[in-house]
Image 1 (cartoon, rainbow, N blue to C red):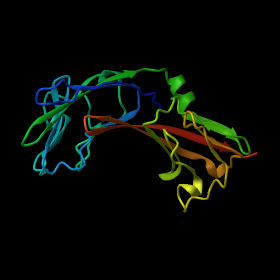
Image 2 (cartoon, rainbow, N blue to C red):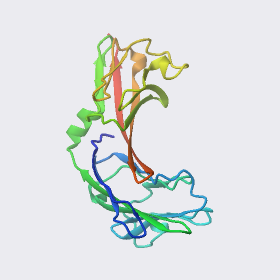
Image 3 (tube, helix red, strand yellow):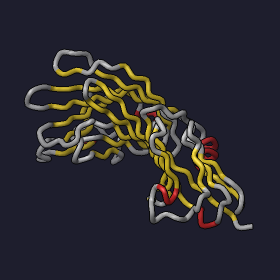
Length: 248
């Protein structure tokens, strides 16, 4: 689905007595977003997620207890199977996000020595069905070019990856230390043969001299990395394009 993401960061990470680190995120209705814990493994930590002070997800370090949404709180049915927990890191994914999902998501990482907290302030914007359809669907005649626009400006901490039917076809880092397309990214992907171009400023992808075999689902993954007080927090967002190439 279509998304537009803006990150405004105010960082005061708390480990017992300091201020709480807050990330502000703006999404488009229908997007998916992953709120990253920054934890590599939860073996020694318990992780709890709250939405507007209501517990919506939890996973213990030994995975003896795992819950999301109504499993955690019988009075919480807002998300209706739209939440997923990463069992290794405790990161929380919200799928098909709605405007009613706007609010504060609080992360608590509980270890033997302390409790760390972080807040994600999420705002979900609504757009008309027509606007969504225009942004997510692209139709061109065979031989023409088509551009899949990210709708964002890259920052040095952004990693953008393009996938076609789950195969990596293009990648660019915010500092441009790594840029690849097609076979440079994936040796088994030779479908495009020098027909892909990446915009180095936005990460938008252009397919030139399109073929009917280029029709299908293209997914863009954006990973924004924030480093605060020796902890790295990643926010992952996805955007999907449906491309149709008509024969001549």
